[in-house]
Image (cartoon, rainbow, N blue to C red; front, side):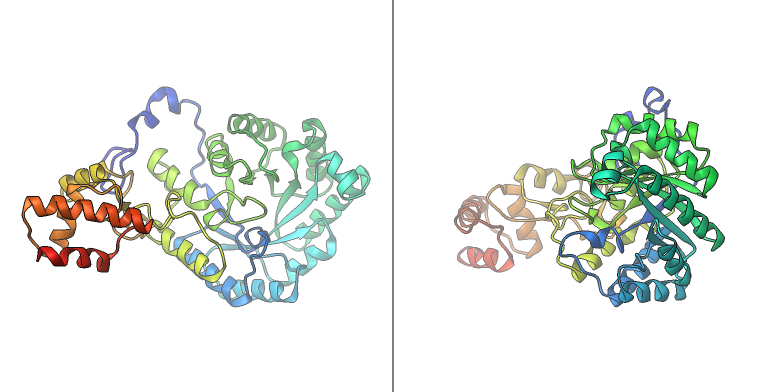
Length: 403
């Protein structure tokens, strides 16, 4: 088995040439810190009940997610109760809470029994002054007191500077250093709150932070420009220790980095196995989407409903030729790898002769070549007229006159 070619995936060998990999600094024990139950639920209109959060936490544990940020106790009693119940079930992943930089928030999280806490503080000077109406001194003071309280409560403490990537780099690093020396932190999150960080900036930022703050680095990147997952991979390749993700990129505004994208890319293109139960990736996304109103485009990579459906007659021909010998020639990974539905040739406007052969074989029917051509033309016309794919009933209706 090559790193780019296994019995379940086939990506590019170019990903592994020496010139490409020379700057990689992947850690051996990268952790996924999933924030679906907190930041994911901040997506407008997305609400998870206590029982739904517990169900998702149980499924995330089945997948092998390393950490679950179970919520923010200060939001509501229901959130606090959900966190307590998730902790009580001892599912396997480390359970974290989320808090504002307030001692009372920290105490509420500690009372829930979580192992760790993520403490947020605005770090962009403009945001501190204009959005919060605080002085810079107040932001520093609150951060020190809240992180000290977390340490005293025995919580693993992740310092989370909101809007860090738009802050003045010297100011924000001085803030972090001040909190590290006078307050407390076990780890620092690089927080791209509005998704404005470019991929090629990420390694530089990780290097700068690691050189100044001798703590593990976590990544929290949003997806406003569709770069959350790519940025996260760049950060992990630069040596970051933990990546914050959500199920299927749910989250505030455009959402967060998708754990599915990151985990699958690392496995199949970077030879980095996160130790997940990869065959539960698609089922977890399905569960999440069954619980909330969260539509995902049908051809979205990894979790889209239609990514293993083939309409094009040309590609259907390829698949017919290799389905029993080398199906990876028509997709970068097999559906079984992520627990997806099996590859299927569907009927539509772009179908070809191999598509008709597949459907005739599927229905154990034989007709002559002339009838196949006529049937194909009728399939194309019906799909065009109805503006959709044909289903089994449509096909059988068209097939009747040839039988």
